[in-house]
Length: 326
Ligand SMILES: CC(C)(COP(=O)(O)OP(=O)(O)OC[C@H]1O[C@@H](n2cnc3c(N)ncnc32)[C@H](O)[C@@H]1OP(=O)(O)O)[C@@H](O)C(=O)NCCC(=O)NCCS
Image (cartoon, rainbow, N blue to C red; front, side, top):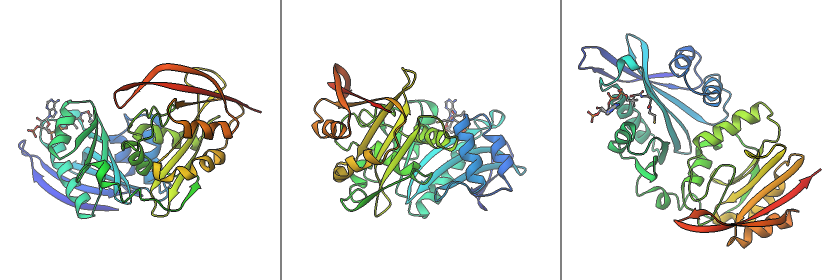
């Protein structure tokens, strides 16, 4: 579905029309795919699936700048329950520095606010020209080039969202993409949440979760995940098995939960389909709770690595665990 949002005369004398395309939409599909054709496989697969109506309850919106009906610029958001990821910001090279990106983001922001949007997350180069553009719209760094737009800051604004309550383990879906990203973007107080996704403190999961959905869609060997979802729809935990980046036929297992939902951590790990072969896991040495959960699921301590990573600026040791899954 397409909605015209705005119209502007550029300094170049050209007329810019800004439209919002709500996926699914096959009509503008080929043009959106052409504009964003330089993106990698997993991003292009999400765009294809969203335009074809294959991304469950995820809300994908493309904000396009058109000149003579032809898309020259884009901003994409993916949202659920008012939380979103903001990305694919692109202006065709021949139309740059005409103010188009700023106009498209202005229209997108007005739309997000009018719908009662709660928070947006993005990743870019720290203090790069795009970083400055996003900063001027109210995004603030949560870690280097990872930025959030959220009244009062993302940690404070999500306290009610993560209030304790019942939760259930479900299969990963596209709608979880922005929601697991919010969980990973706040400092829950759990150190070393995921080795596979490098969540040492906080991390933007925009690329890792898109890649996960892409790999699950292709039945990639050794890749599995489970989501812990609260009654209000919040993603409050996630477990993954991913092929080790360092070792063939070895799989990295991770599990993390918001601290209000740790009663479910073991059930979440037990629900994760585990690949056959050698499984490895790691916990912060101070995190006895999670170490006990890995032990109770048959993982054995195989060693310690000292001052292996930093949490909240402090060097920390990690415990390594292993298990052979027949
Ligand atoms: C970044 C990008 C989207 C900007 O698009 P654009 O339509 O040229 O941007 P605008 O003309 O609206 O410029 C917006 C502001 O950014 C500034 N700006 C844009 N590109 C800049 C650059 N390369 N260097 C310095 N400033 C720049 C403009 O001067 C303008 O500043 P002002 O509003 O304070 O006057 C475009 O350069 C692009 O597509 N780059 C490649 C993809 C990319 O990097 N995307 C961002 C990924 S996070």
